Length: 413
Image 1 (cartoon, rainbow, N blue to C red):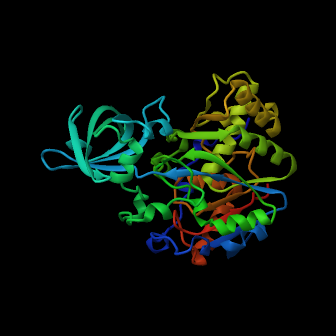
Image 2: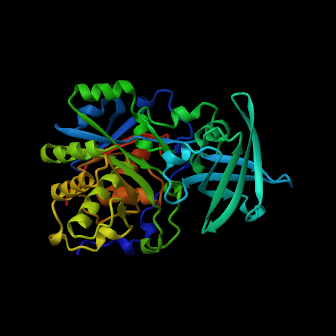
Image 3: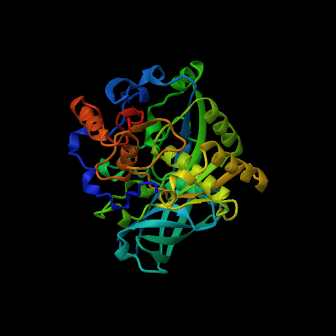
């Protein structure tokens, strides 16, 4: 059987992170950050601009081109109490792309600030202007499920689409550990230069270091660039409160792969290395493999990818198909569907003992103690994550979303 990390104790994945090591503001220039390199179990560092010098030949970098939206909306009750709706995702069956084009009304699952002050079916509102027209935005809380509520938004004039509502009234949802409100123009800086598809409430921060110039330089040095989409949810900041991982409920995130991307990925796995930029791209790529396994075993229902939290850990390693066979099965399934892209959701958790099927290395920032992101790093480098993070702390690396970067190759077995 594949090693199952259900019994991992989250207390084994902690370290002391002083507040002054958390990067609360970005550098003026994205690529002026530092790069830690972990290769053949040796740690070194370099300016991030020199990334191409450390990539193997025949490398493809895979980027997550999701785009952060202004997901926080503020309202007032008649009593004067302030209510915040932190929009997470549209109601089931509606894609973000469809919801953003909605006129007059839409429904989103949201986390509610000051929720005790807002009763079910009570309508609250907010007023603002779009193109010099006054807009009234109403919100009604119609269902509660755990820590989330389904909120129905309606607005007048109804000819505006929801994306215009967010652009005018929404607030950028910076990570809570920054302990500050977003600056006026921070949406541009908190998105990657290649961000394309609206839908995330948090940035795929490993990509924040890349500039247009650096991307062109990488291409000039024969590095292939490819793009997928995973809409990052607020669950990425969710602390692991359970003592052991089997008690932690991993969040689901929406995935989109184009057919062209699948073709490129399969070709790349035949000839070279696949290195994701960030943990979100990593989870996306590995989820593709497990969807391929389900297809080959006749367990894939419909044409929408769906990978559960513990799904990779229920197989005998000797019974699993090769990476190329699994990815080819996914591609064939998409062709069979007549669609040009594969969509779906993943709740995959990657932790110590996981055997990577698609990726060969990882570019990522430095993550919070006791987080699922740190667990993913440990799956790649084992206990060496402690050496890596100690080096970063001792050599003035900046941590978390606006912090510095690392290029990590697998630890030796």
